[in-house]
Figure (tube, rainbow, N blue to C red):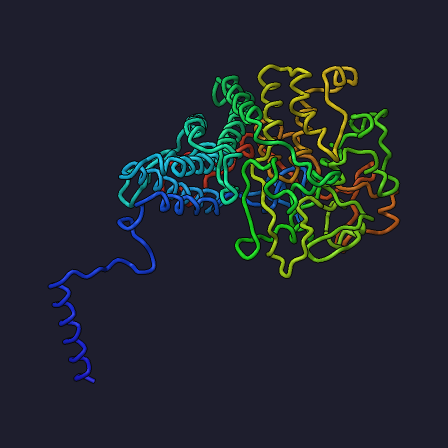
Length: 555
């Protein structure tokens, strides 16, 4: 054994001596270091491609609000959550920002023709703005870091920039890069899904609406009209480009099928997270079928207008059919109701096969409210639950139309019929929806409120797309809307009760009108200003005390 060790040590010594006498390439063979990369446009394209995989997808959309309820209560929706030690919405975003900053910083020393990489640098700057938007919408005030950091960088201990500064950075960045990005129509077939000028302007409109209405109702800055002007300007530029339109490729079912495979590469998609079989898939289509993604609540169901009159169902002249039979509630309503909620008795296709929906709560798709979600249910049969391939729409044209309508009203306190026809009524006129138009005279003559109707349209059109809680927060009405009980179907005295549809363990608690109480008001809390904000993760503050104090109410 000793002789073996001696031989081995001698061999190592010879290797060390030889290595001192000649150059040895110690670069890793399975990865490229920076000295081997960033040489040409293809390197920048590869680096940017990785950023696309970090975009949002569908997880539990709107279950943190008042229009969705999963198979159990949400501690964020009911206000019982505590500040977390860690939050991937913080840590993952800063990882993504580092990747963006590296591409941008490397481009500054690029030795070739900058025009050849300009588009990819603009895409990296788009994703930097997009990731800051994701941080802003949740944490309001965050550190602004635009360079690559190392372990010695003082910026590791940066303070959080004021919310207004983060907003201005995003808006300026998106405006700056817009002209460096191609229009949607300029993309080749191989480039479909890449960031476009329309995506930059649409995101700018979204951020400006958020910032402007937050400023109006929370008063964190005084220039809310200027921010709303940015939202109006950016939305108008998207619309006037003529690059986008609402999807009507599936006829009467166009609204529902927009969100599954039929809607891929549609003219409505401005920014999509793309999937393809055997390349990249997700499980959303199947999970919705099981009810895991949430079910509509009474609050959402009540928002759908009557189709023949355009009136809310609480209006005695609306034509609402009532609740005695299961189908009654859905008769003569905004067609988006039936295209979002799967009505018992409907034969439907799912990834697991073809079925007829039944009212029983425990029969797929499961529900706790009595309403069963149809939106996002794929119609392509697959072998495994994780093989859904439809794209996820992150920004779509309908949202841009809604932004223009809302920003105009919030700025001016009024909106013309012409603008309503160019925005909300375009959405209502989608084939398969075809609802009565919204006009000022209609609102006035029926004792309605224009702001309420604009917000109703936004909630219905964007239901289960993850906007609702942020909307309630920026409108500063969450303390009213989130404190009440979450309710479901009308149960007492209806066909649901005759069929005994409740799942095991549901006590069948109802209110004085017979509506199912899913989560009582006594179990739901909203403390202002605390619950208008999300807390910065506690471990982040422990690592960097400069992040303190935490957000209002979380100090």
